[in-house]
Image 1 (cartoon, rainbow, N blue to C red):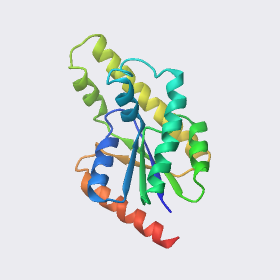
Image 2 (cartoon, rainbow, N blue to C red):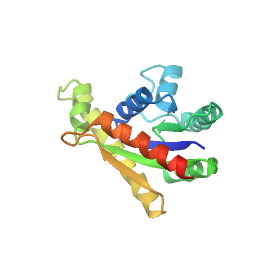
Image 3 (cartoon, rainbow, N blue to C red):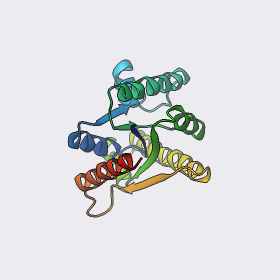
Image 4 (tube, one colour):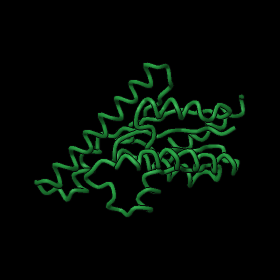
Length: 187
């Protein structure tokens, strides 16, 4: 049985940092990063400054299912999904798709995200900075709306603040791996 953890959170919150560290710590980790797959297919600038085209949403879900099935078929114990779900309907589909495996959600939050968005925009006042901050605020809003909907429907959502003073990424990731191993062994 695999554990499937859906990492939710806005741009620059630390989702990829957590995924990279978990992958470094264990060979039993399989990652699904839909955004990276789509950017590789369509080019790095494909999503910048615009919403993803509707056909991409369906394609992303298909890639999501294919890639998770690949991790399961490889016998991976922990599958990390970056960037999904985007709404409650997607979450419901995801939770029902693998009844033999444990699925959960992890909301990654960081106060430093706005500083990171500004840094990526070059910190210059103007449309690039305005767009970066607006996208980040929208990301946060969407993530929290989905998180609240999930909680209201009885789903478990863990929250981690990667921007907290003294946050220890390696320690947190090792604890997450240990917890996952204990839960898997108890079932």
